[in-house]
Length: 147
Image 1 (cartoon, rainbow, N blue to C red):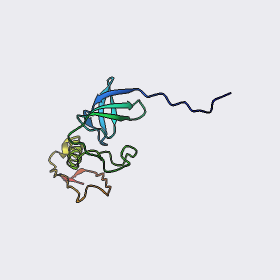
Image 2 (cartoon, rainbow, N blue to C red):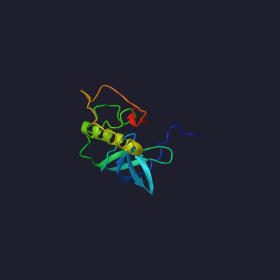
Image 3 (cartoon, rainbow, N blue to C red):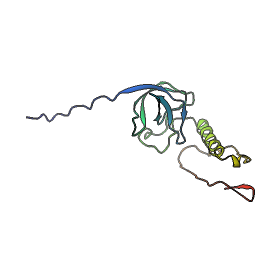
Image 4 (spheres, rainbow, N blue to C red):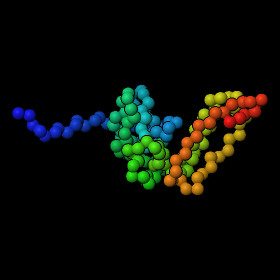
């Protein structure tokens, strides 16, 4: 006769890593076993215990052993279960700096655009309660940089 009781799933292996940087989507990146592992909601400089992160998906930070000075408490109860706000655990200033550097890196990939003047990211009047995204096409027309 088979038991109707469910057996708990075996514990997933964990590993410890230090987040080196954020990828272009805002997920933390650490190196384990010679490969990069994405860790959403982890910030640069943090020492974390992670699980998962195999070939098919990101890891999950199960414990923050050493937190970044930029870490703040998430104002959203959905953080961790939703990928909509990958920087929600970073201070607003750190979010703005990340966005600025992402634009700088994107433009650096196109040396012909090097004369472009890049202004600071404009902070929103309120950092929560909206969601905006932009993808711009940049080029040169008649010797001038255009969007």
